Length: 224
Image 1 (cartoon, rainbow, N blue to C red):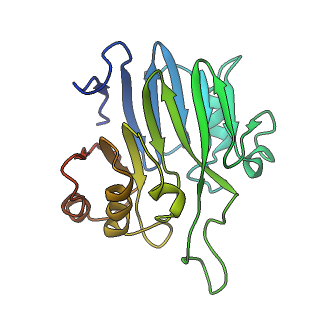
Image 2: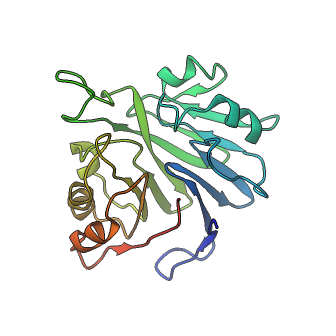
Image 3: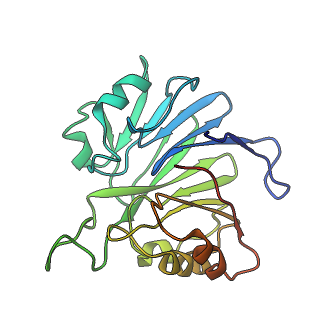
């Protein structure tokens, strides 16, 4: 059963509450000020009783992130879609946001952050995710900054993040990184709260133990 979590921690501004609904794998729905934001809607998830999207964010071209059929089901007239250029070839009305670019949609500031592999790929000389093709995102809800990693390794751009209130960080082999690698990155950029997602069969206990900075809260939600 999917969990809906009203995010109102003491260290976050009470006037800006974000509801987090984990869907499946890399798909999540965020609700803020009656606005519904879908990240990577995928047909293997359960979207029953969730309002149509005001905003859809797509991270990459792989089928578990780019699902045109599910996008069509959750959108409504006026839904805004933000995606990298590689996705816009399929979702032609998406607004392109490239790595390093920033825009504002429905009152939310959106920053596109690189996501890519450093070494893992389907065969020697190839990577599952190349730099510049996909986006992670930082979403600013008022003074709260939410980071969604997308499919990535522990890249320098993630290590250099600062002032992140909530982070969703991926892990699963062979496509992204190990729990230990993910925790190492989290220890570097020090979000206040981190949710492992896109974790497949990864050992979350290993991740929790490896997040050693006492200022970071690890929270586990039901994605599968």
